[in-house]
Length: 289
Length: 289
DNA sequence: CCTTCATTTGTACCGCTTGTATAAAAGTTA
DNA sequence: TAACTTTTATACAAGCGGTACAAATGAAGG
Image (cartoon, rainbow over all chains, first blue to last red; front, side, top):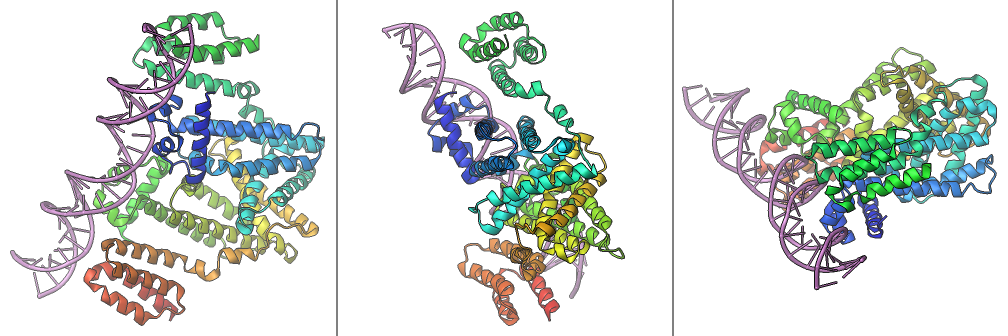
């Protein structure tokens, strides 16, 4: 991604942390980053899309750190999980992810909402899998419930612990306490057999293929959305773009010759305008081959 | 309260449920309720204050129901608690309280935020007290932690249970399951002795006097805010109003003769404009005497 | 019936918002 | 130098929350 664009994302994130999403106007961002309005709307089709870009980089960063902390460690050691969670909570706080998330989740557009929901489910699945590393087989049927409740407990405990002890308090004891509660609860559940949700439902919510390809799918979607705007009254043009999106997402394997010829037939819109889309598709199909 | 105003609150609430707070414009409300803009701003000094009025009536209603469900019942029966919570969660869902709450909590003005925070703490204290009814003495030091975690568990469990079983699913099993988890956790905590927050901190967060008077304080505050706007360049006038607010809230007992004479000295602003404030203060001081 | 008062209405207006449009300027590459 | 893409500056549209105010309406009492 463009360096300048990355810089805008970073600066805007800073503004959102300081003043909140709603209370930061695009003009604020333009002033703070020194770009012009035209450039802004060249980079992002809307303020929401900028926010999505911020979430995306934050999620990515979190996932990387999470994985890095696990290499060479004993996966079944609860202390490692605690440290991972602690780190996540800290960076979440630094990046103001939760407040930004809440601020937008219940109000904003469908696309953003869906993106955040999937992010949510992914972290839920991560917790589920890490709990599976730690506990023995008998607990596994209850791990989804446990992961769900762990999130709830952590959220509330941290919020009120920081209210009591100041926002700069060390959260390690809270995370440790919360994880211990859940581990004890799991023992009890494995005996009593009570359960709310079967773990299999996770696969239903997050079909493996869909989540692997999520990033690619959103990229394709936004590239195509941008193209659509170039000639949004040309019905044939729009149909072609819709066809490409559907073919690349739904058909397995996508028929590359079809996509290529359709793209070729749109060349009149400007070779360079199509470059991004072409590159995305070529990379993806190469990787599959 | 004015019937018409109440009607506006109700209709606006309906709109907020359907479209969200941010996505409902004042014009929408005017069209839907059939009042004019002038009347709207006669009733509410801002869109936020309308939202506060909605929250206030919803909280009030919830509290009443909560108390009504307890009369003539065995306070130590967990089933009653479960039914209370279940009812609360249902009405919360019907009134879309949580989403409206979240939508606004992280973005909006300080006053609204503080009001919601206090509402939050009040329901936390309610849960704390109800858990005290149910559990024996040995658990009491851990009840605040339990109340906090109960909220987290309920929130997450309900959210995902409804995602799995459809939004119209019966939530009784979820509430029952969640309360049981907490009760078991309490047993364990009373043995291990682990604790995050001491219950005494609740009194610090919600000083008894302050919460009793909260409703009165906000009423006084908004009445005075409204008056301030009538002559907002008259410094002496503003100082008088500030004095009244401070005297009625902070001085114990408030020196009525002082307040009365100050109000008298402001009569030039219009007798009727001061009526609301006068009535509020008279009622309060009568009740104390 | 008429006067007095408060409420309500309709409308114009302000400053701000997100987002579009576009011609001119600046940068890049060959 | 020429052809191109990107960036800039600016004007613009439509909508927002909120203010101001004259005119209309309603209610109460002499």
